[in-house]
Amino acid sequence: MELSLTVVDSFTAVPFAGNPAAVTVLDAFFDDTRLGIIAREMNLSETAFLVERSDGDHDLRWFTPLAEVDLCGHATLAAAHVLGGAGRFHTRSGVLACTKDGEWIEMDLPSDEPVAEAPPEGLGLPGVRSYQRGRSDALVELADAAAVRELVPDLDALARLGTRAVIVTAPGDRAGIDCVSRVFGPNVGIPEDPVTGSAHCTLAAFWGGRLGRDELVGEQASARGGIVRMRRVGDRVVVSGQAVTVSRVEMTVPD
Image (cartoon, rainbow, N blue to C red; front, side):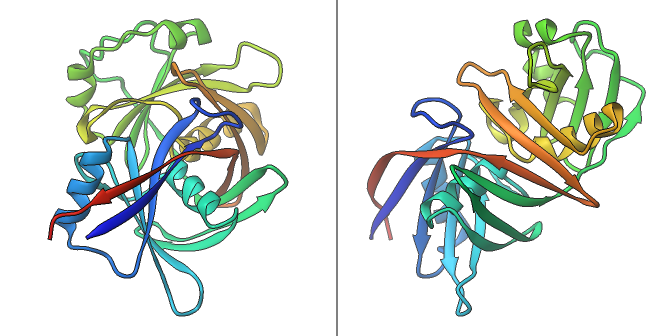
């Protein structure tokens, strides 16, 4: 079977930055095993699979090279970009609506308010100021942005937390940036995710409460880097980013 996929760099306006995701539109979902091997072959942090519904909405599923996940922001942004900048997606995390705002795409995502806990022993992270747990991820606040940018984590130690990912964050260190972050997901086959939309559902709740503001801008300080806008609206977070198509892949999928 021949399959076409579009590779999109999300949370960036220029190619070869932000976070790449593969997107394909299917007539119907393949079985989970086949979806998994396609994602493993693409070897990106996420591959998004879309199936159009009778009402024009789409069902959307996300796979890392190792597992299906409940929520992925950057691959949702990529899916909306492939569809022209807007769409309504039925997912494991409910209905996610995307709208186009000029060169930006806004995604209506569920907020993930983290809860403070005592930091576990053996994190191996310098200058931990606070430790929080959300639905899927751990959030660790470090002393400053330099500590986040320079961090070389012990991925085995982070994996032992048992979370989907570990978000490491600190206040922003330049004008217009409220917070910086990096995201590590060894338990789902992603040592470091370049830019993570779903993590900003947690960051928006954490930093919005800390700073007393509903609108924030985050920088994910990975090697590729990306800028994410956040707006808190009740129990939702509008996460916004730009996206650019970088390649198209033709794949023969075994029966």
